[in-house]
Image: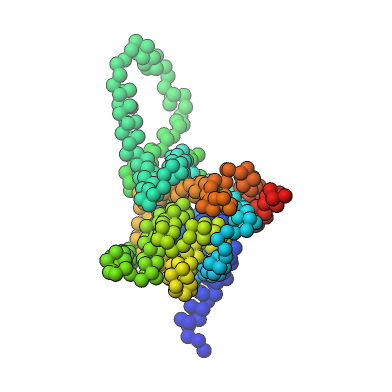
Length: 500
């Protein structure tokens, strides 16, 4: 007979497998699409979390470094059944795509420098369809993130700002600015004093003859209360003018827009979290991670002679997983710098892997498996060693940080200022998804003459594929995997027509 703890652990593992097993092989399209899938799965179908918690986890996942959708899935399972369930869900989510990218890296390492024309057309079609799928996911997530004019402006600002400039420090700054903007607006630190000054100025203005006549006429008329024994009720005091403790408990006035804006957690809202998720343990986990990060980067810079290739690969991936904010829009140029500039992977192989990862299910950070395998092969090591080292190095930082943050979040999530900041961060993260659309669009067209990639707009056919995947998913229920396959087929059609 199995002991009760083992039976309990087995039931939990089976529940995690039953709910999560298919995500790693069916979730195509990158993080924006993944978030939409998670909302359908865990909010609407299984009801593991509600919409408010989903929006909070979305904001946290986007505001921390590392793979955003992977952290989201990890946190959902962590809240539901604890650390072991979260770890199992991560393996189910990441390993299928990682194994596939490893196999493709072996194939890419053995092909000639010049690819056949149909292959380039196939890759360009995949990229074109992916752009449409991500654009659709960004639009649908915008409908949840935009609750008022402020959040609409934040989405617009971060999206356009991310298109105009790209740097490691830039995306975290945009997220911070988004959170501060919503905090400043919700607490009225700028506009409320201005409104009071304007009201005071109006009360101090001199009385004119017309004002005096109107005032005398009002005094001689019958009071409205004398004609109506049931005077209308006074409107409630705006929440923004109440002290913080009173504002937390003040109900929204009927007909206000706050009723349709899921940005305030009701006072009775409770969330059951594992006992281990406390602010003390969370702080300790984050501190321990920062210590390992300092040791890893210090050894990378000080080992003499040059550290072994596999250690440098691990250090580069560990560093990338720690400092990448914003997911896909940033990971592509950073990994290119860390492996192509080092001479470990050729530019052509990098771009082939980039196109393939867009068409693969699961996290886009599995791209590191592809690069790590090629790095090890080109350096004379076994490809599997490089793949595993890169996979561990790029995923561990984000998962450890978000695990520690969950403990701190559980202690602070009821604070009004925390909810306000997350509202802005949520809108800013959605805006950056439009940046991801742009980043892939400008390098998605691959051909023999320009293997480094160029804009899909250089050929109208690729724009047609993008529009087809968007319209098909938006209005005809075409799934992301089918849209991506259709894009690949349309790319081959273009090649056949042009060649003929």
